[in-house]
Picture 1 (cartoon, rainbow over the protein chains, first blue to last red):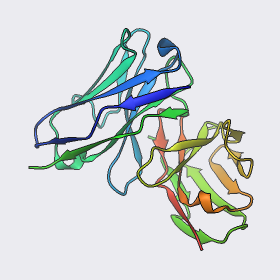
Picture 2: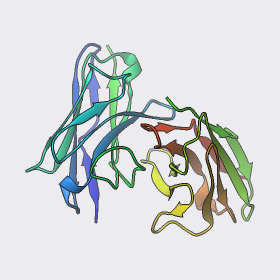
Picture 3: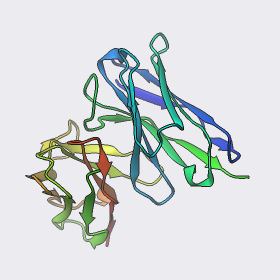
Picture 4: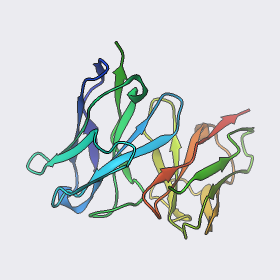
Length: 121
Length: 106
């Protein structure tokens, strides 16, 4: 059974960074790329970027380029997303989401439970 | 970026009703479209992929249709558990989501 378990809620001050983990289990880690999607309060879903879990290559949405870093630890079957230069508009629930492919864009067949990041002074 | 526009933004329907939600893409996306259901405080749940393929475990009252620029999610007989917000997602070019349709049960 596939599980994506994310780290807990965070409260950060403007300008700080946050790093969220997504621990995977129940499938072969390197067989699926992992994406990050966020959802601001009352808003729709917005992609941030993704990682090829085989070679660690990443692609980021232009909106977050320069502020987001996605990494993976293959031995721990865990993916991380770090967002820097936080501002109030980054207050959102952040999700990791798996695609049924080794790389690229597709539908998201499994999601983490979400991590609420609150940015407030 | 490809823009996805859903309609309506919200709707209210009765148990047993047939309900349809439309998603329009700003350019052709072939059949690279998925539908999700999201309940408050929960992650989205995949319902339909490649426009019309039903995800395993999803009730057969959910169906998807369309290709090119216009797509429809249909619930054939609305159930109480279907109260949620529904999103479409294109994955033809990168990935973008519609703004959502909130479905309420009368």
